[in-house]
Amino acid sequence: MTEQSEWRFSDDRGQQSAAPRPPRRVLAYVQAGATLWDLGVRPAGIFGSDHDGPEPDRAKTGTLPLDTVAYAGAGSGLGVEELLALRPDLVVAVSYGGGHVYGLAPETAKPLEERVPVVVIDVSQARTFAEIGERFAELARSLGAPGRADADRDLDAARERLRAVVAATSGDGPRVLALSPAGPDQAHVARPRMWPELRVLTELGVRLVEPAEGPGANWSTLDRSDTFALRPEVVLTDIRAHAGSLDELRGDDAASAPVVPWNPEPLYGPRDHARFLGLVADALEAARGR
Image 1: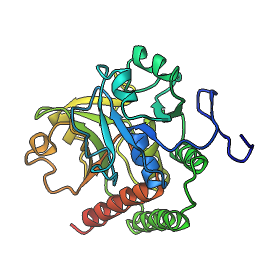
Image 2: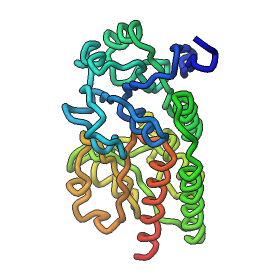
Image 3: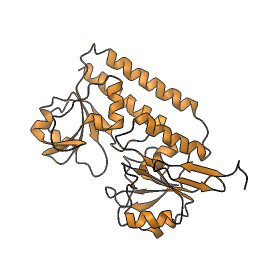
Image 4: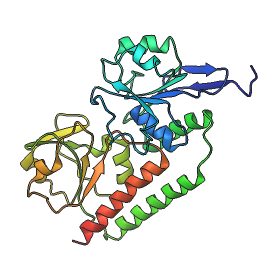
């Protein structure tokens, strides 16, 4: 084994994984797998969380080629043997703090790590979107992904376009509300400062609505009337499979407000992020033109 061929990577728990050569069969939590694909790494397989079902949630998979990327299943019932059946030589997971592996039960995560290297990336609100994205990019580079200057240029262009659209509103931009429908009578309204991707929008000047202080660290759960009393002119709506229907929630309230599909488990690759920023810019332009 030579120094050039040896692979090492220290994850966000401070744990170092090593192998004689860069891993080639990566099994990843769906969010991590879709992000790595955008960065030039094709995962061999993906797995979901307790929010997911027997099929992968298309809201979370980005541009992953699901016809060639295996889905191991999801949730606390997912066992070690189902994961190892995909013959991974690396597992990439995410954590929302404390180093806990999201999406796998502890009784699965621990024995899995005894048999295959596991890299955990912290995607918690304590980090910026850019910091999380760079950690995924570092991992992708370590796995042999080529640099993608064109993707970075696309992201820079998307950021500049959104800044320009915001500037054109003359300081009185449309009110943007991010939410996850919880049925026809209730919504979980996001607290923007708690979500790295929403903080990016705020930094670019987007006028995100902040619900009143109260219970709920990341979300404020409001009834239908209180949700639309916030007077959204653009709605970012959770499109994950377990979220409710925005159409059922809003009825005739804010029915004309432009809608942006939003995945609260965002993908951190430059192309996926640029695509989201472009949709927000489109919606702001549409709201301004009404």
